Image (cartoon, rainbow over all chains, first blue to last red; front, top):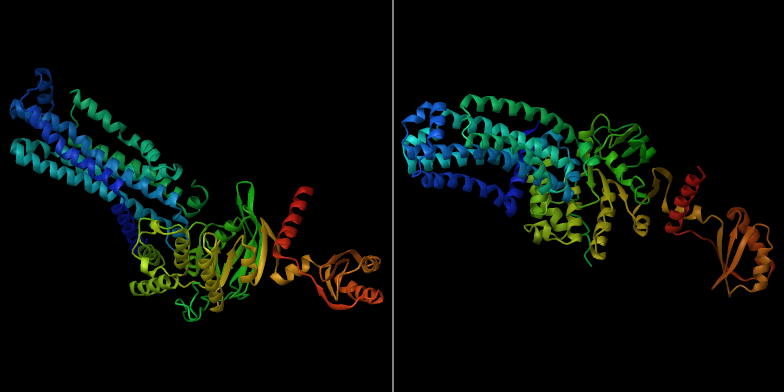
Length: 262
Length: 337
């Protein structure tokens, strides 16, 4: 694979992304909400202690939370629900970029001109995949770091310790990037068949179903996912993404794009 | 009218083949074909194009013109046969072929949020051109196609003609010896179309080989050294002049000092070699069984009937007539089958 060709695709993708206001807004909007939302919610719930049963269940699952004041415990519980929202950023951002990018090229019929050059399809795929994955991964990490910084500044070291615990770090630094890669692969697979970015995103949004299930289970106080579980989930998602990438590579062959993509 | 300059901006040193092939042709195909499922889009395509030749590919929609271009530009693989483009084997060196050909696709296919210069710069990078070379060629081509002043504007704001000119500039960016142009003047206004036609003529003068798909028959006749009629397979290939003469094989126009009288027409029709004869404003037109053998006999009959002959000329068909003759013959064959 030749870096210069991948870089050329990457650069053009970035240039187009920066000129697509709608896409840019849909990428930049959610991180702001996800960073600010839990911080505000934490302040709102801090004066309202959790029900006794829920408190007992949380402390049983996380003994270190026993040292928190009732207000901090309520805030910690609400923060914990948002951890999975930070994983939705690397899921949605790459999906949006990949679908807009590939379906956009289908609609403007630019791919044939690109494929008529000596670029290899693996280089084209790599350029597009990186261009979609990097903003998703970066978005997830920057949002998390911003959130953690705000928690440190507004809530103090006790709650900062909660949001910088191994489960948070494993989720954002391991599972997040794996989800971003799976999201890119899903975007490529769906975009090969769909002709409208919105439709492709709706189909691709199936990726968040397991995340939503975990959010609901955690909110119900059934369990709290720990660092090991996030690490294992990251490995599983990565394996799934790599398997999907094989299909994506086949779909991204020059011949397939020109003759099968409609 | 905007015209291409006498010394085009893209003029470069003569193009030399990387690996001369026996025979040393720009394009050589033998039984080339491509099948999609059970259906052949193109089959049994055998063709030899000389360097510097402009070859027109005519045929109805769905005849296989775009598939032929995609095959020869190494965009899709053949299902049958073999081919060499600029000396390179399609099957063995597809990357090399793609670096040696320029393709103008059916749709301009431009990134509409990016500027004209940025579009060309991107494709220049994909062609592996060095930054300095890219910058120099982009300026030359944009100036040539009168787009330099709008180089920084998004191509989404361009007219169809401007987009087409930019797409042609893109196909020329890496200075390819072989060009495939799919409907190059389709969306252009007459002035822009003239620029493109002049440019094609100039490119031929530089030793480039051009395969031109078009529905504009006068354009094909004017630009092409040879024309091939395609409907899945090549039905007929020849120079425009020979095609026109061949189709109108038996038609002879006789110019007289005045209109042909009914008696004169009767005398002509009595000639065994004449199939049909009719009056024309300046004489008569006769359809002969065999123009070569029948023309001297026709002249003798006319002279015997007292006609004053100014000129005898074999008529040539228009390219449109040739087109319908060739395609019609094919349709008849298909119906019979």
